[in-house]
Image (cartoon, rainbow, N blue to C red; front, side, top):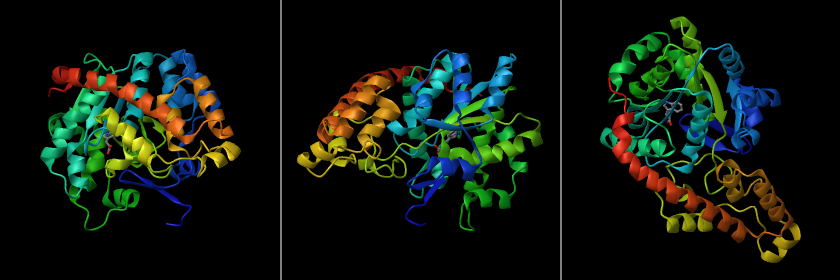
Length: 369
Ligand code: TRP
């Protein structure tokens, strides 16, 4: 891969992602100002993640909203591959999904793919991924979902529901197709080759169209799902994509459980958060204070600023103040980091309480089939 290039696949994200280029490569639609006002018309609120382009791309969202206007309901679906504890990058589409659910009164399905992560990670056991599935479910529930309109699917537990749908889908995906999309090789285990059928299954679980909010790296799966949909007489899923959350070490690639030091987990203690941000958060500041005061920092590449923009500072005015102060040199890197540490720890204190309370609730959310 050339130094200025990037890779985005469900199992690998690398390099400095140019999102306009990615839209072209993937063949998705950019979220236009017109589409934003259309969403606002239904929700009566402008969500900061939409305003700021954290959700930047879609497929068929216009169609879905037009149908909704005519009285056609839709449901929501998203998921998580439980390969470890939840990190703050995972929360982006989930928080947004909760907002969509509240605004559109839609039913939500959340898929935990314990089989997928067992297949895709060399040293994972199925026991471990199944355990993490339950742990990740707590984070999802903690965001305020209600068991009345939210169901959690765990692949190895709910295969009875998924399998008949996955079988229909699998018959319409051939090997050369999935190989071309994911770059599979002869050594790839056959679980992986079958897997897209399982991730597709929840799209067709209800007899109405679906909207899926998720990180854009998963788009290749749903590109296949959308090709299959008409062949099984189902509507194509509508998709809305968020950008990848950068790892602490820099604005390249994505936050990933494979590097613990570059990742803030929802289970981290306040001390750990402080240590990780201070030690590892890539700074857009100058090498010393004098120079920083003179030249100012660069918020575009500063990871702490980016986390505030993406998740932790929804207030545009406050964000702009931080942006301007940092850029002018008035605010130092240490001060910016301190703001982020406070924000994350405040969020996690309450999240971790809700997460513990979710343990008693969990059973009510699990799909019974
Ligand atoms: N494959 C996803 C992952 O590794 C998990 C997943 C399953 C998912 N269904 C989904 C993600 C639907 C987004 C939307 O995280």
